[in-house]
Length: 245
Image (tube, rainbow, N blue to C red; front, side):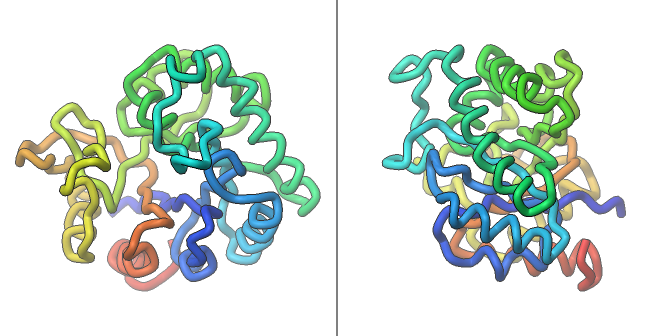
C-alpha cells in the first residue's frame, strides 16, 4: 500500500490541534481571514516543527462571520481581487515561519474559496497567479482532478490531489454541500472504509451509490470535525500499523 500524506485544517480555534499533530504529516494553518490569529499561527508553527509536520497556509475569503464558507465572488469580490487577499495571508504566515527558522511547504484554499476554485477555472487561475507571484515553489493542495489541478499544471505549479476522509462525495467528484444532512461522515468505521477504498482502489462511492475515480496524493481531515482526533488516530493506525506516517 502506498501511503498518502495526511493533512488537517488547523488553527481555527477548536482547541484540538496539539492532539491531532502526532498523527498527521501536513498542517493547513488558518491565516486570520476566516479564523485564527498571529498568536495561534505562531504556536502552531512551533508545534509543527516539534512534530515534524509540513507547514501550509490555509487562506480564505475575508469572512470570519461565516467561517469562510460563503462564496463571495460576484457578491463582494471579483476574481481579480483574490491575489491581494491571498498574498496578504501568505505573507503573514511566511513572516512567522521565517522568525521560527522555517518555511511554508504548501497552500490549501479554505472553505467556499476552495469549493469555488474546484469548478471555476478563472478563480483557480487567480489562486495560481497568487502562488506564482509570492513563491512558485509552494505546492497547491486542491480537490482531486479538479479545475485547480488543471490550472496548476498549466502554470507549472506543483499540485497535490486531495481527497477527504470525513466528507461525502457527489457524482461529479465534488463534495456534498454542508447544507445537506449527509455531507459529513460521522463514524469511524465509515471514515476508515472510505479512506481505504480511496487509497487501495483509487475510487470513492458517492451518496448515490455510484463509484467514481479519484487521485490520491493527500488525505484531509477537518480539524473542526466532531471526531477529528479519533479519525486522525484511526487513519494513521490503519495506514501505518500504528506508526507515524
